[in-house]
Image (cartoon, rainbow, N blue to C red):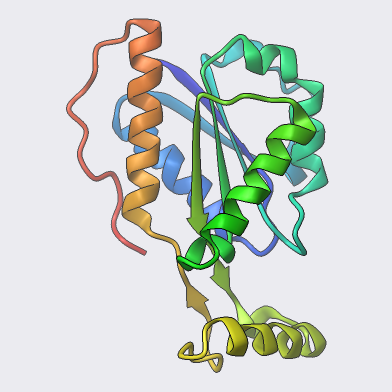
Length: 194
């Protein structure tokens, strides 16, 4: 069994849901996995107690959460000494046309932090129109009409491929198991679809 830290920043909650699914998938493989939101980071959090670290961030206004960037900057040496992975959540990842832009966000993050994770994934996020204020809802709907003209903006929309999230978690776990010499368990789908 390996111990995993899943450290993430979330803007409107979809990255938290993805981090939770990763934690559930890792636990289903028999590992100890802990999810930590940047806003709830314990003062005594150290990476020493974890065998592997996954870091997740979402994109808002073309930028990742500063708290995630600060975490990677502060822990770069420790991250370099362990198996690591990075996952990004963005609306750009939700469409084929946006994939290049989403990849650019990842590249900019890695360049800014000078971090080289072993695994990287990009997931589509969600649009929670019902939670946006008037101005934000209006602005987002204008962009969506241009980028996704068939999307019904009268209700919330989720673009996360949950199977891809589980596949990523299983891939990271298999990599860590191989690197640490841990026998690979028989893992199946770990959670119901949301």
